[in-house]
Image (cartoon, rainbow, N blue to C red; front, top):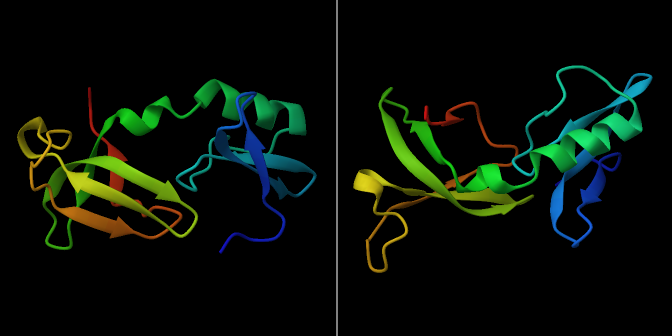
Length: 120
């Protein structure tokens, strides 16, 4: 459940791109995965701009998920919500193939540090 002081921010087309969260005298931008976008508090307009600049295109990137045994598995984000984030395994780039049988893994929101963008 989201804290009551998180303010949802949406693009002009209505797509949620994150939240603006009070932090001391300023605000932090938080993306749809629940991760901070701005490294330090900024003013409201700067937080909005940071979310607008980030958008949601990063959700289409490949990610790596570190498993409890220390291995890293390639995954893609399948579903995003404040109740949790679902990723699917992307072994051999097959996550988007119909009938690929990719494993679904549910993660909490905000996503843990075990999920990170794969190097390009």
